[in-house]
Amino acid sequence: MNRFALFFMRVWYLLVNAHRFFHVSLGSAFIVFGLPSLTLAATESNTWIDLTTSPVGYFALCIFVLAYVLVMSEEFTHLRKSKPVILAAGIIWAAIALAYPHGQTETVENAFRHNLMEYAELMLFLLVAMTYINALDERLVFDSIRSWLVRNGFSYRQLFWITGVLAFFISSLADNLTTALLMCAVVMAVGAHSPKFVNISCVNIVVAANAGGAFCPFGDITTLMVWQKGILGFFDFFQLFIPSAVNFLVPAAIMHYAVPRMSPPPSSEVVHMKIGAKRILGLFLLTICTAVSFHNFLHLPPVLGMMTGFAYLGLFGHFLNRKRHHSSTYNKGVIGDVVPFDVFQKVARAEWDTLLFFYGVVLCVGGLGHIGYMALASQVLYSQWGPTFANISIGILSAIVDNIPIMFAVLTMNPDISEGQWLLVTLTAGVGGSLLSIGSAAGVALMGQSKGQYTFFSHLKWTPAIALGYGASILVHMWINARTF
Image (cartoon, rainbow, N blue to C red):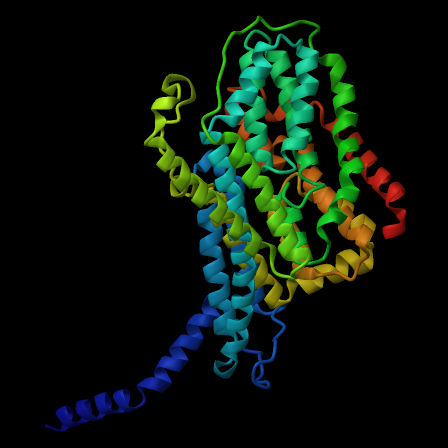
């Protein structure tokens, strides 16, 4: 009986003091896994805590590096790049929340919501742009351009320059990935008997597509981020037109002499655009004007103008579907106007892996920024190294690491630099990826599409010429835009 009473008393003691044991056990677990630092002292409510030297900070850095290693090895693991960064974002923010005292969790929540809002604006903006590009593709606009180039009997050298120039200008409105794939389809079609032409043209297309995206807010995610942040105005980016053109023209002029002096066999392929193609292109340009007008004149976020433009496309799609019922007046076998137009099918074809990867990157870098690492990096890069050297180095780094996290990290640092330096980092982050084939989405995609005719090492052969263009574009920018520094 005494043993039973003693056992009962012990159980009762454990139940009464369970909360104490729970807190002790939980704290021990955090020490084991290197999460919240025990050195954090209680501070005033809703104040930021520097975690850069705490176990939480080191833990978050390790998680981000591990996730990005998986992103960079996507070609070998076949694991979509969005998955590891989304998981890393959740783990990093959970670790930050656990590191803060119970009464200060609102600080972490507000910081997370701020980063989420930045992502939401950019995601909706990109989604509308991608939907328009998919609609133009479905209406056979790009196939029509390709067939026109193939059947016009241009020589290899003429096609080298035509595809490069088109890639440069088209990528200022469409993304560099879509542009590169379109131009690669052209060189693959006409260069079936000349692998050397395909190889060197793909290098040229990657350089041109990346350069063209650097002088317009719509050309690349990095330029879009800078514009949406309000750091540079819409027309300020066009000061980079000449430096971007130099970045493309210098290596192209060097590669020109390696292009075969022959002409491809003629082709009679004809592709007609579907009904509404030209009007959708016009609506896309109107949507861009709407976004710019909302931002410049009404001082509203550009995403509102883009979403308004999405309505233009949706309403026109409804018009096309109604017109389809009277399609007997058209040549159905040629223009294919009997195909229904569903705007939401175009939304479904958006590059969701890219959009979700962007979510993970924004939240990961935002978490590291809240810990304090971005302020620390800004101090080292822009105070100790100097803005010019820092911005040039950032461009070189973007040849290895995707330029999206790099640019978002710079925006999170928010260094106190001149307009000319912001233009410089926009330029270098946009064109630096051309130094290696793995430095941009365009290069990675073309390595897959070219079926072994364009490879990492074939691109590496021309890296000195591309680096010459990279350096020349920086010098030209610092010369013609000297007043902005």
